[in-house]
Length: 190
Image (cartoon, rainbow, N blue to C red; front, side, top):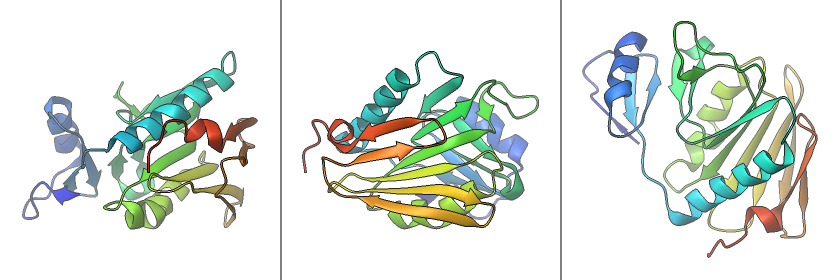
């Protein structure tokens, strides 16, 4: 990811104004605007496959699912980001005065790329953990069959599980749904 300009500090209001008219998406981190990189076919397919699994599995339940272009605000860090996939409880809570920025994710999934792998696993996960509603995190590898699943046990404890076989099933306890790795990785070419 590249910074829009390192010499200028942007307020969150300036960022939101710029982002509404931007041709590509940017994250915002406490004054800094960061351009987001494009995705690969595997990245897009994995995010789409997960979205389909979630939409079908959660039909009729009090949840909303979002993919890629839905902006999330992380208030404790004054950070705006675009997770690959999010599940939110209804009613969806929005940033005050905005109709395009959510604040209450239960589950977030990121598809790992070479350029964002460390960021998604470290700084981004730390930022997400500051959100009170956030309960589960999926890190999906696009280069091999591997999903890391983190589930909140309490305020300071997360349970980690790793899945590496197409026969594995991930239990998402927050939303009472199982995800088959065979379905998640359907049509993915390594």
